[in-house]
Image (cartoon, rainbow, N blue to C red):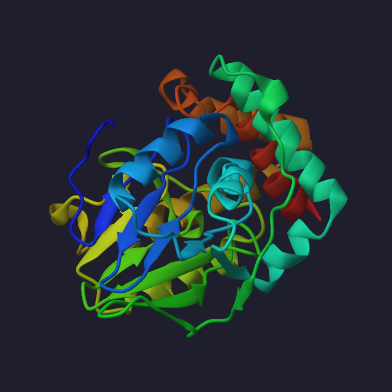
Amino acid sequence: MKTKVYPKPLARVTGGLGGEAVLILGSEKTALHDLGMACFNKEMIANLEEVLDGRPLDYVLLSHTHYDHMGALPYVISRWPDVQVCGGQKAAQVFSRQGALDMIVSMGKTAAEFYGKDPEEITAEGVRVDIVLESGDIIDLGDEKVAAFETKGHTDCSMSYFLQPQGIILASESTGVLMEEEIMHTSVLKSFEDSLESAKFLSLLPYKGILIPHYGMLPDHMLENYFDVYIDAAEKEKNLIEGWINQGLTSEEVFEEHKKIYWTEKRAVSHPYRAYKMNTEIIINRMMK
């Protein structure tokens, strides 16, 4: 297993590129934050079994319902059938819709082909939310407590978590993604306004560390200003899109302008172009209404 230094009680169990999977080894119970893509489920489960070292997996904490974050959920449920899956009400609703499940499988197969895996092994069968969370709910792991907070913007089902007493925020994509140090990407699909509010809220928590989606633990020297940097980046992107729309550009033309600035070959290493295109078109079309 490739290792990456994380502060205790966190352990990285990510199986491949795409979304991160991080285990919280509580004094009494364990919780897995996100699961990564379906095509890397075998690698992730092997890593997870190694770190658990015979302990049960008690909880899964979903940040949201996109294929690159929850894709391995069916396989984890199969391996640990008694695990309690935690997510927002919107996440439970998504998993109840066949159309949404079909999209998860479709995107999972695209990722499998992109990374040279077998697309026929991809499934969303059996995904579920056992514990529906609201902002302020607490998951008790023993000496460690995890508070859940809705952080909309990326999706309406996006949740962030705050691990105490360590003071670590496990952030959702609503408050930014670092592709590499100092390079910030927004990931807004539903609402820039909601995303900005989520960032402002999380910035008020007494945090000592931040786990960033697709990246890992934020370097200490970026902690103080991280949310300010994200807010500046989100406001810039929002203003650019609004400006192109106000110039009378079509949605296709707005996308091409966006691609010139925000799509790079380096980004393509961990983010399939189909996903970038679909996500960007969604927010552009929302803003044009």
